[in-house]
Amino acid sequence: MLGRITVFLYGVVCYVATLASFVYAFGFLGNFGVPKSIDSGRQMPFALALAINVGLLLLFALQHSIMARPWFKAAWTRIVPVAAERSTYCLVSSLALFLLFWKWQPMGAVLWTVNSDSGRMALNALYVIGWLVVLAVTFLIDHFDLFGLRQVWLYLIGRPYTALAFRTPGPYRLVRHPLYVGWLMVFWSAPVMTSAHLVFALATTIYILVAIQFEERDLTRSHAEYADYRRQVPMLVPGAAPKRAEAPETRRRAARQAS
Image (cartoon, rainbow, N blue to C red; front, side):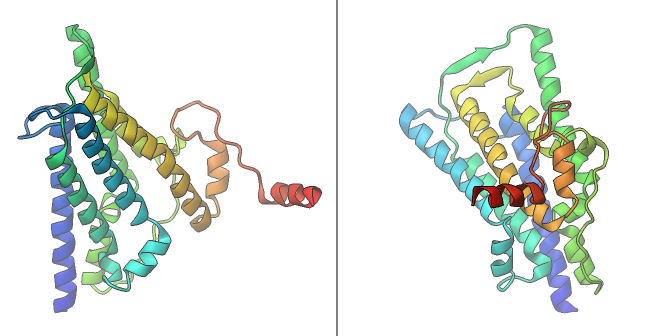
């Protein structure tokens, strides 16, 4: 029981750290309410600032992707309790984010500025809406499972963990990745777009597009119905033509013909 309580408390600490990183990110990207934002601080030479920022983004991307892969989880859970795996992932992700917030370098140049009050209000509103979309979607897919609390709670009360069934609630009927749609709204809704903000937005957008490929490969392997869902629902843009993946029998027939 002591071990279960310890794992549960560890999960709560990881959850609080994750929430703290989200709250700071809201001010960091919006340039308000935090000690250091994406465009604040002393400026260093452009090339050095770019190298540091790209390195920080690459570190976060590698951590976020590698630790999410099934092969890594299988190896990692030989070291940490299975119930604490998701909490640990969230904690390490939060630490990588805080490192990025701390060491991020401003890069000076302003690429565009929206001067009209209505335009600035619209972009600020879109920024807030993006965050609300992200938050809402986490609850649609099970907020507490996503951030590890469900796992440590079940471990505490001695109940086995059961993986979530594949579901497509609400916005998942419009796009396959509404969580990423929310993030893209957050990253690009900037009344003042600086070079530092553009680097962040471009890098995170590229990361999202690449991460989706790995994520969907894993989802197709773990949920048989995902292949049909992928053929029927667009990836990020509502109403866009979804990717038409070949059926397994079609691929086998093409392979036989090629041979």
